[in-house]
Image (cartoon, rainbow over all chains, first blue to last red; front, top):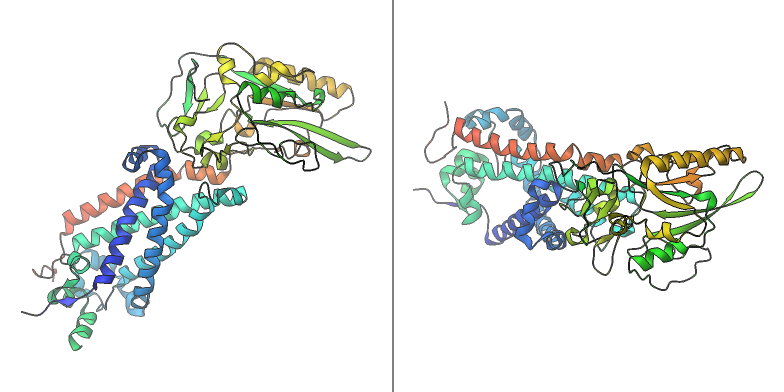
Length: 205
Length: 289
């Protein structure tokens, strides 16, 4: 039987899960303020004022943990012509017809797009969030800037939440993926099927 | 106002179903006739006294405005503007405070159910026990009125003395005004009176005198009679055509249902994808060939 391949080391995994946990908390507390139908979520954080107090600090932890992960993985996420070809054939990927796709390295085109969308969303969330953080910074900005920041914060949060939903679903859909981020290893077959170029690279080591 | 009043609430922040709207309470309004105002600040004192507010002792900043701006404990403020016109200097005094918009931007922006309410009589009131201190009301207001307290992180502004009005009294500032520049009554009655006053001012040579009851926010329950009705900005920046910012309308309007729908549909599509296409499992090679 072929040996398992390490995909994420301990430090990568801890970093990822710190982001994941703080993301869930930030999303739940933020959604509470976005739509009245989610306001009940403030009960998870000790009521409205506590949710308002905690949300920015949770967001800060998420942001800095994400910066660390972005630096770890950015060099794996450079877009190539092969990735663009992969993206143009996204229907084949969605239909479990991976053999029709150009061979994939450590990450496929879809994963790379998601990575950069997350980088953009996190940067916008951080910058705009600071601008209307009560009671620290909100009073120091012209009101048009606070309004623009609040709107952009909500839009980028929605894009990020939808992006993460796609990310989570992909891990459920493509079996054997989750253990890569839990235990750190994936099976030889998994790597060969989904990331053949990366598999080759790892086998040659 | 944190205390309960007997008045019907017809609009409630962060609430998507209608509030009680059976009883047809007459709308009220306060009219501030700027041409009669002498800038004595008795209204500021009456407001502090009735509402048990105490402003910090400040510094003289070289103008008559005292304090320099509205604060969480100064809900009304006389603003003094010196405006040079062709022939003379106008000293324009305006009593600033919440305008009690018929379509309040603060209420639209507020994420906390019941932290901002509008009574059937038109008064817009902040309920501090439900306020979470997020400051969204500040972004919603076209008149720059709400202030977040540094002491308790709650938003405050003029209540139009909702406690007094609920028992048939006029607001404290109206009660105290020595020149009769501030009057209070039914909205229609006040509009009629304001228009009559503007007409009188026109006869006296103020050709542009007008009632300020801006349509962009659905009209207001605090109105002004302005001698220079064509230039409200001259009165310490009173907006000529106040509207809830389009950015706030977008964020608290269409973005809310669209955002929730987009998230719900993403989850639904993901689930249906799994149901239709099934798992992608490298261990059992189910790649369709």
